[in-house]
Image (cartoon, rainbow, N blue to C red; front, side, top):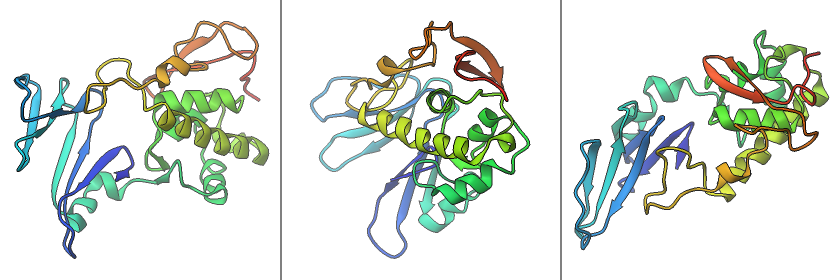
Length: 223
């Protein structure tokens, strides 16, 4: 399963399920080593799970930003990261989303990135959703009207489901456990793009909440 940006691996089916939870952060990735493969783990492999059939699951993390939790499900999900998560970006209903956005006196981009507000939405998907809904990333969240917030709510679901369909973003370290790349990076509308795919204007890059943010100055204007 997934909760926020963490992968949850349930190891036992009983009332006190044992849970392994991993947040991959910036560079963490899973690697499957089949029993007949003659490969050695790199120095960045920090966890190895050995299976009865002699295959292995490795967690590799070059930057060492990843986090691993292990234990009883209740205890793991009671950890600070999970307790502080807001409602899931791909499941939150519009009324709850509207209540959150319409009360925040901060930029809409930083509001979306704050996992305490809404969980599971990262930097790239936020830019893509804001472009799709024609909202400037520095727009103060509470100044958006109900129609704009609804358009953003729909756009978030659209870009997340597009990312799932295209099997994620492989720009640097991230790969599927079998080594295959995701294809979402080939279908960006605004992130790291030169020109707007809607109007042709030059895409601009600014810093918000210490993250690079891409937007179209023509399509996405501050009110």
